[in-house]
Image 1 (cartoon, rainbow, N blue to C red):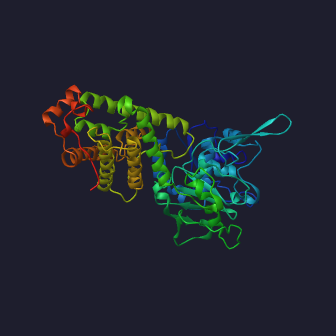
Image 2 (cartoon, rainbow, N blue to C red):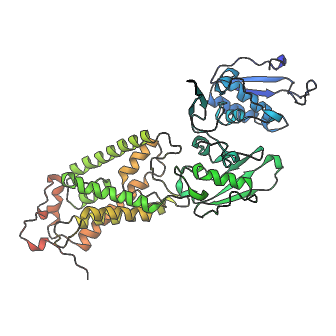
Image 3 (cartoon, rainbow, N blue to C red):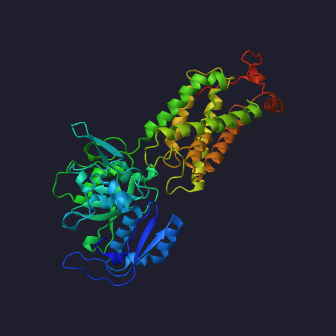
Length: 486
């Protein structure tokens, strides 16, 4: 820039967006093989993101048409960051953005992808002990990028790309392979946010260097086993790149043997939910009843087993507890990219009516199990009621987890939605469980095991909270029911 004063570059402050717009034709300078844009260039200084978007919408063709759009974009990125801060980003201050043979360096790639010209692709900063008591700081990617990066060099153990680049906010990756860059992307915006979409999906590939004219679509099936042929010269480099990176690129945080991509095990997730509920019910059931779920509380209220005031207090406590738990989980897992905190939402292809029906069915069987296993009129109960309820929760997850994430507990859904500030389709996870709980009461109290006491007397429980019918010392044998297999 110092050699070409007519460009009119000025010192810029960090944080401002600088865009250079070509104002005329370009010509070569000197005897160098490099071509410089030496015509009139206009420097636009934009102080906020909204102004930047407006400017780009009006001037995007300046960056798309002609051979100099890439240069204009690169210079704009350099001025936005400022040369002083770019040198501070380098591990070695004398590094360059353009390397040997005119290739861009990793610093320039990172500048365009993340806004910082750091020298490495791993996460955060690594301290390297030089051996003489001096510590060298190797700077990597500090936060999750909007656009990702994958490298064939990782397949050969030359570098390690961190999850901040492997799991970008948008399913778009710049791929470094065979000495040039190409693009891999998905048309599913939620690919990196919803594990249900990760089983079978399409990726599209574009290679500008090859003057590609036809669409290249790659179908990724993460449920299939990949043969151990990564050393085979016949395996395309792009496939090696995907095999090496796709596990962590889709959010898997554990090693994958033999380059196999592992999907979430629904059985483990279901058992984790079920056993945790069973443990809590066994531990605190004698204190509060261990409802833990507004749908269960509503069912017991409609069954005239608790007062309205207690039901309201329970639901408030459940929601507050869910919010606190989600906040704690958010703090513990804050470094994980794309962390939804278990927020429930509809899977792709599931509409709101289908999701509502699944939530109704899942909650109906749970509340029905609670009513039946805690019915004190029964003389045939054996085993553990908390374990039965926990297994019912596990059954609900096995049924619904692939479609709605299995809410069946409005409080749990509410806690994650509040902390993530995402209430998409949230009404389903209140309306569905409440309808399911109410239907369970109608089925159990009026069809399967009708109660002998007068309904008006039972309704008094809503204000007084007394449940005389459940007195185990009652002499009225008709107040008890016995359930036996037919």
